[in-house]
Length: 186
Ligand code: IMP
Ligand code: MG
Image (cartoon, rainbow, N blue to C red):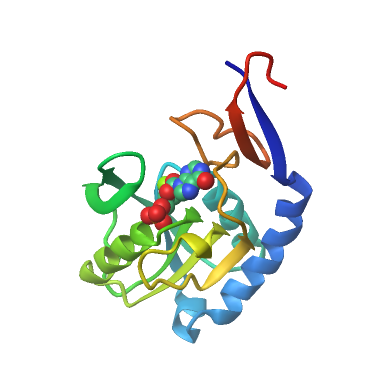
């Protein structure tokens, strides 16, 4: 069944904001991280589109960085996640002594970034800076503050630019709010 897709953030909105945000991230890094570079880490798969664009924006600002990934699963009982996050796949390279820029598409309850932060510190990261494309602060279930947010959005289910619904819609180049299924898509 077709669904309506109401634009929330356009490609132009995102591409105008990312260079600003990248500059804000670089300014906020500890001096050593600015000199030595950072490891950008994201939980697969929602992070990938944001990570790719942020990586290029940071490259233009001469911030050296490598990329790595975590694979996390959250298990819920019913429709709302109850927030048990589990590690399903670990980093490929060590982050021991490195400053990590932890990125994701959305911060919702905050549990994913909270879990990933604890995991990266346990793996020896010297410091963590967090950044998301979208933050839904009204949904927070744990006391987590994201350091650098591109867009604060209301509590709506969004897709595109890496965000999926059951693995669909990740390739949409903008962010839209999905409507319910309708017979004619209208
Ligand atoms: P948290 O652990 O509740 O903060 O959830 C963060 C994860 O939930 C993100 O990595 C997203 O993959 C997913 N998520 C949260 N809200 C949405 C949404 O509106 N659309 C698609 N995925 C979402
Ligand atoms: Mg995700």
